[in-house]
Image 1 (spheres, rainbow, N blue to C red):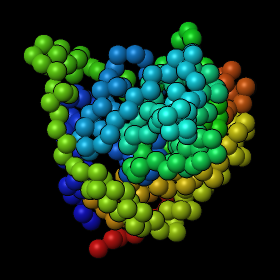
Image 2: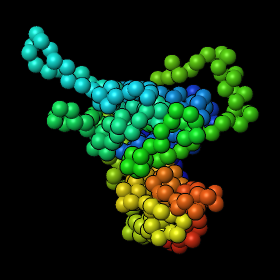
Image 3: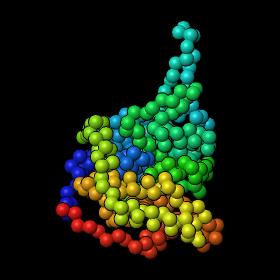
Image 4: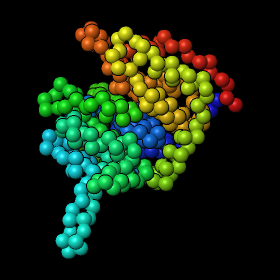
Length: 317
């Protein structure tokens, strides 16, 4: 069984590590989401490197980068664009919004109201936007990395369940350990390497990687394993709203992308186990009783993974 990493994805990850210290797992999961055609929600406190992560990813793949700073007064047209009347030509001209990019940083998405948050829904789900009745496709690849501060911070709005479900992966970067933070200080004292980061992959190569993900084999037993996990979220007494079929698809696609990163063209049960805690918890809602007892969606998924029978791994030549 091959353990060789995919050479192209390794180049991307190694390039990101030139500016991000101790965040290999976050970079890897972000790349998994991008290759699977999904999006990432990063929830963490300010100042831990969320913005630098997405900028480093964009620079590494030579993608167009756009940033949307979400504020309470942001309008949907500020996100997707607007048609402006040109009196000389006597017609409306489309002025694209920042959503028209390959990699979009939706910074502090929970600092704006639900109406503007929902402006991202069609773009994230359909890779297109509709303005004045005209649908405009977004260039592939299209990847949104949204950041949000914890809900308990002042001036924030919880994301609607429908929008949370659009994110393939939700994760947290966390604080660096003392050794990593010392490296951060040393690096900041000398220079700021992000500005000198060079692309290591072309957009065409990235598109080819996305196509390769779709060809990764998912055996029937792996699909059944995913369904078993998801079904148990719908029958769990601690859960008020279980994972939808969109969640099943998301977990399968994430497993395919992760397998590709590992240099494989087939999925393993280990891929599903590793990714389920990042793909599923934000898609379910625990009951008020469970919440009162301090039970989190992450704990529910962890318990389900311990109880579900793992399929026997086939030997792949």
